[in-house]
Length: 160
Image (cartoon, rainbow, N blue to C red; front, side, top):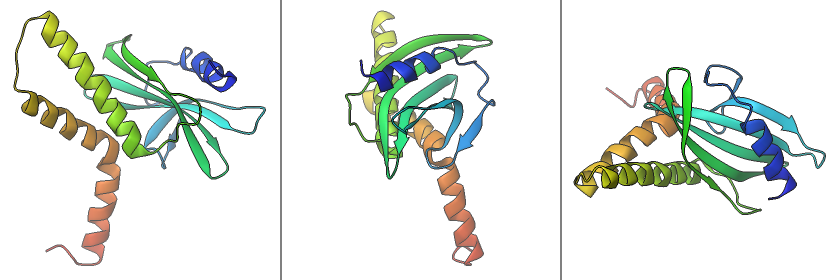
């Protein structure tokens, strides 16, 4: 584990369950819950977003003109309890984009659901499951972007 990932792991383990704490990172669409400046000049942060009753945490390192993706975690939230369901750490040099983070969140959530269904011996239509997860994630990852575009279209009178 790199020093950067160790630092992010340390701050990620001290997070609260309150998604309203911290500041909002407009570029990533995340509620920032922990942030430090590393000796190398990178701003290491952990941000989270609500997806139904799950919290998706993303650990990133922002430098000049580049953002690296350190890891992603999915937690189930039940009141004040938070249970880690799945996580993935990325190799050094993995670049961050909201689209890439959304795809990784989709993979995490699908794996969680498939594992749960398998243990319960429940069968569902895969395409229906994928569609529902994608719709939920699109709302979580791009809702503000969609609202901004719709507002601009109304302002320019492109919508009737």
